[in-house]
Image (cartoon, rainbow, N blue to C red; front, top):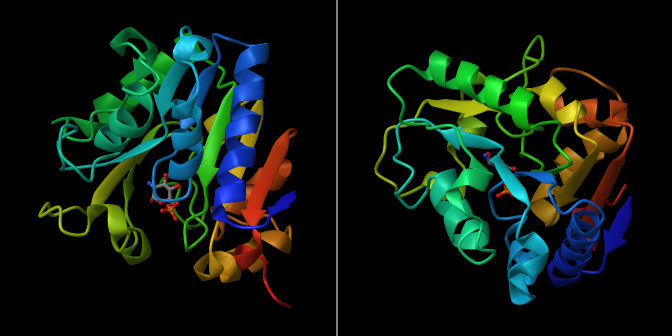
Length: 234
Ligand code: GLP
């Protein structure tokens, strides 16, 4: 676990980490979270030459349902803006669930198939949900191993990404917990004082489906980069 001075430092450390792994494996499948936390790291990546990313493949970690991928607020829109366009990732190297698909179960089955064909994930970049969710693996009685449809919690539905989108969202689709644990490397990014309570729970290392991020303690190659504000004071 690395404690960065602040968000700028965290973003640089995360970008360096991602860049290092892509150098080692240029065709790597990068599973990318959206949300506020990884934006700075993605921006740093976009500042350099795009040559390094000429073969890298990207898997979208999760998606809101009921909001078209072209619309601001969707994870597709976010990744297009922050990763795909700046790094010149061609559509054949981008793997995405359509959150607006009519048959969401079939869409998840298609994504599980795509992951079987393209996987394993080389690096899974993750943010920490306020309620401990990873992707849209929400707290519950059990974890779902592969791509699935999720009824989102109020905490997830309060995420700033979709406020003002006008869409009425109740469901999400997400990479499953086993898919995340099967990644070669996992990188959890945590920033800000509002995450310190969640961080406190994470640091107890008690693995429970009530706090999905705790499963990362079972990952063989986990790196956590948090900033000082996210570190619990007690
Ligand atoms: C959202 C996203 C997740 C993200 C998480 C944390 O629900 N679907 O992929 O990791 O929230 O977001 P943030 O980094 O904005 O706190």
